[in-house]
Every structure is written in structure tokens, then in C-alpha cells.
Amino acid sequence: EYSRFVRRCNALLPSIQVIRQALVFKEVEGMSVSIIDSFPIPLCQPIRNFKSKVLGDYANVGYNATNGQYFYGCKCHALVSESGYVIDYTITPASMADRSMTEEVWSQFGTPTVLGDMGYLGQSLHDRLELKGIDLITPVRKNMKQKKILFPNFSKRRKVIERV
Image 1: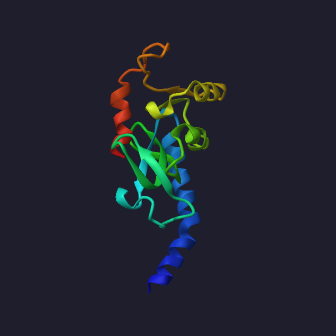
Image 2: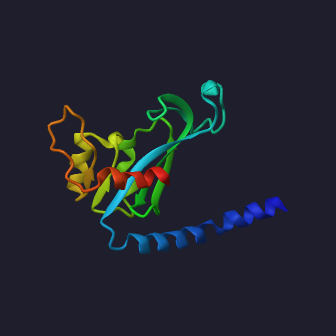
């Protein structure tokens, strides 16, 4: 019976979370670099953005710079190891900025060095993370006074999260 299956799955959730945390701690141990990024979770086609009522209390309209279009749904912010293992994640409304979720995603299993994309640019975020001992490495714009990235294979390492 399906309803019984759903109840059992819900009852197993705490056990699954404990097992996942143990696996994550094992993966994170000794790791110095992690990668952070976000991706959209659209709930309907763009034509229906303002008519959709799915997850109406939580989902909203956000912008996906990769596709250059607006979408209705949520956004997943993920922290991933260099080997592609998802360390931690959080789901937010689509309009939530990447920078605002950095500390929350990093907080439990974070590493001293985090690689991010252009969505994580911002001096205030860099300063806050620096106070916590986190080195956030992002690409720089042409008009920025910062030095070029001195992190070896930055682009190659960032591609790991794009495949997850």
C-alpha cells in the first residue's frame, strides 16, 4: 500500500540523515577545498511563471543568468567536494541571491578554501568570510582592482559542480 510506504519513508528520515552526516564527515576529513554553486529548480514552463500555484507559499520567480530567462520555482545552493560528492545543500525561493546563502551552506561541513562563481562576488561577503577564516576564491571582473586568481586550475576545478 502506497500510504504505508510513504509513512515508512518518513519514519526512516532521521536514520538516513544520521547515516548521511557520518558519510559526509568521513568525506570532508582532511579536505581543504570545496566548491559552492546554485542552480534553478523550475516548477513550470516560463510562459506560466505568474499563473502557477505549485508551492505558492515558498516558490517564486527568479532569474537564471545562464539561460537568460526568468523561471518560477526554487533554487538549490550546494557545497561539493572536488571529487563531486555533495557535502551540504539548501533549497530556497528562486529569488534568493547566491551570496546570502553562502554562510548557511558552508557552516556545518565547510572547508578553509571555497571556490565560487561570479554570483559570489562582493567585498562585504569576502570580508565576513575572511573573519571566519574562510578563503572564498571567485573569478574577477576586468574593472576590479584585485589581483588575478592565483589558484591553480580554478576553471577546471569549478567544472566539477556543473556536472553534479
